[in-house]
Image (cartoon, rainbow, N blue to C red; front, side, top):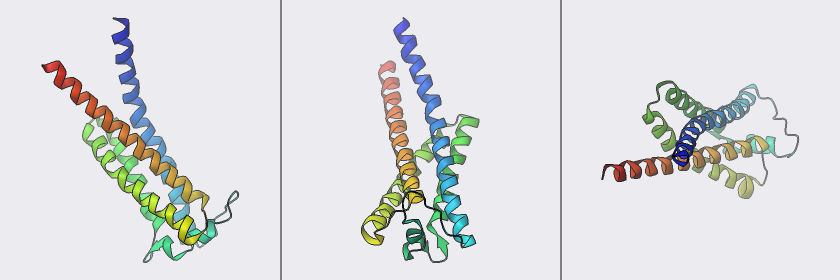
Length: 162
């Protein structure tokens, strides 16, 4: 009996841990992308203390789509993930987490492409851009964990109803 209680508590802990992790990471990503967006519109150089490629990357022709900075799209992406996480925590409606998990591959793929551009095309690395890439990758990994948890839950429900 204690073993079943322990495994049940682990499921509850994972359930609380997962949406909170989505919130924390999306808030970090939102702050990072919004900083870059603000600096773009203010025309202020990006302070890059460790790597020296921030300004080169953020002013390259790849940093905007028309007049819209890529970082603004990142801000909107992270804000969407953040709002969906808050909706889930407020309502406990799994649809919010399902939608959140479905959009994280877009952020991951966009980040992978932007990292490719930094390394192989621009040949400069932006610390803030790499931070965003790590954040979007971690959000995608959390989505994979969520999907696996959903799959296991469905499998457990199916086997218990037999």
